Image (tube, rainbow, N blue to C red):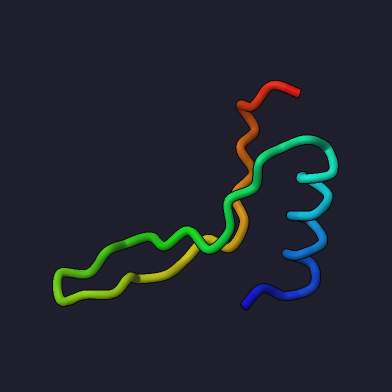
Length: 48
């Protein structure tokens, strides 16, 4: 679950025309699951 500031930043990037990925899981464990997650990652390479 994201906090208010993370949600606000993601919405601002979307408003600016960027594609924002949310809940990206990172660090796959050998016994299943993940080490953590990146809540919002804007694709800054996209054309505007």
